[in-house]
Amino acid sequence: MRRVYQVICHIIAACVVIQAAAIAWATFTIAQSVNQGSGVPEDADIVGFVVHSIVGQLVVPLLAIALLVIALIGRAGIKWSAWLLLAVFVQLVLGYASFELPGLGLLHGINAFVVLGLAETAARLIGTRAARDVSPERASAT
Image (cartoon, rainbow, N blue to C red; front, side, top):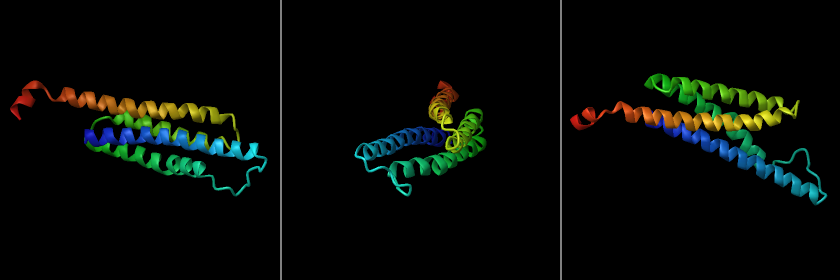
């Protein structure tokens, strides 16, 4: 279970990186369009925004919930997975609220680093704890 926990943590962290890349892509797509004088139509399906939305609104929250379930089943890493789920929830709230209060977008960007940091810290700590749980005596007995 610890290995599954680690893998999900790393996938969540990778999703944060994907989201950063996707939102940058979308932003530069808009900047290019504006610089060329064409503007951006309201119904423009900019791929970067779509990727950012799908990963942020569906994939990451589902992975964070799955991580907590795995932590509860495996009885390990519960605290870290709960903090991570809370940070993901805050990220969702900040993302939606930023459309009305654009200044909150700054916190949305900063909190993305919190999600990434929590995911990687949880993965590292569950891994070191797993290594400590296998004592030399138990390892030689198997």
